[in-house]
Length: 91
Image 1: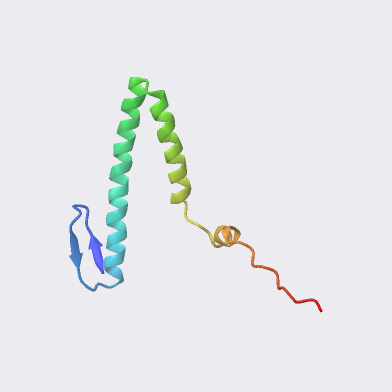
Image 2: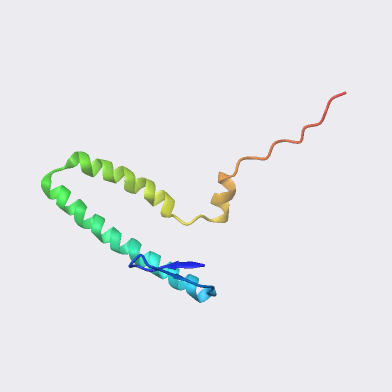
C-alpha cells in the first residue's frame, strides 16, 4: 500500500486501517488548502473584473460540487440502469 503525504512523497508498506484514516485526513487537508487558494484567486479575478474567467470557474466548481456530494444508497440505485426484462422465446 502506498500512502501519499502533503509533500507528495510516499511511504511504502503494509499498514492497517489507521493509516487509511490518516491518509483520508491528509487528502482532505490538501483539498482544503487548494480550496483556500481557489478562493483567493476568485477574489483577485473579481477585483480585476474578469467576468468571463469567473464564469468558466463557476461552471467547473459546479461540476466538482456534484462529484463531492456523498451518495446515499437511494442515489446510487437510481443511477444504475434498469435490468433488462426477462426475455422468453415465443413458440
